Image 1 (cartoon, helix red, strand yellow):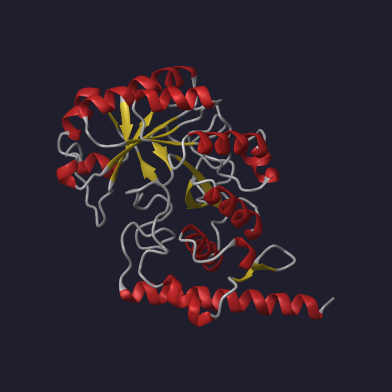
Image 2 (cartoon, rainbow, N blue to C red):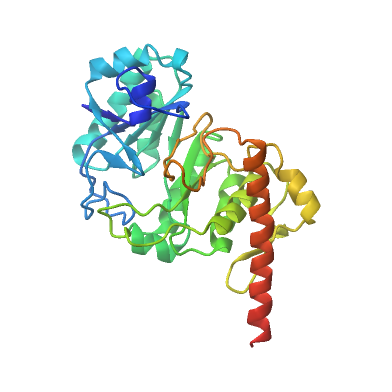
Length: 331
């Protein structure tokens, strides 16, 4: 059996649900009961969340023939890519490359993979099986957060990521989560470093989920996320360099190194606040509740939405500067 996001199942004609935004990538998930201990993930070994959940999204199970039947309708439904994700356990890890190969046999769509790999040889196996891109998720942006919430070494994982990025230029992706205790400076420094290596960086907002160790922790504050999102976008588009960013003593982003007018002009275009990462990935409501604050828009923003997002960035930068001034005055 293969899980797929509920939105994907609806697009492939396998489930009937109401959607205001359709996914542009078919999101598939292989396996249950991950051996990793990621504190934020319902699939984690020490989590008690339902097996059919990842992010805020439900993932019903389907047979391979049902998936094959559904993928026949994928392109006419607006699906442009397949993202195959996999939990880390012995069965799933062994079956993962074979499923990549099968997907390439039954569909002409490019296939991205997101699963734990231990070395370059496993990445090479995925590419040989037909993967278009390979994602090696870092998630945590600081060594302390990585050790605490994922286990292991961020430096070692980053070394593998960069090694793969240099061997397969432009074909490696990663995930970074805002809100795991890292500073804004740490998150943006890592983002800038990875972008220089041609790694596609998908920015997520930490999402507290029932059954995980971090269920009681708050998501990132809206203004903070918009600052990070704006800086990440401008770094990705090469409109500015990391050296232009100005950070306070606590690592908060105080300025993007350009005038407010120039900043607003650079961010206009309705895509700065959209989902980032692999091409054609929009992940509808992965971090959000319908009707709530939208961290990553799965579509281009409306004019009012863009004005609100730009206004939030301006206001949040001003607040950071005020707070920094107050701290300095009290010293």
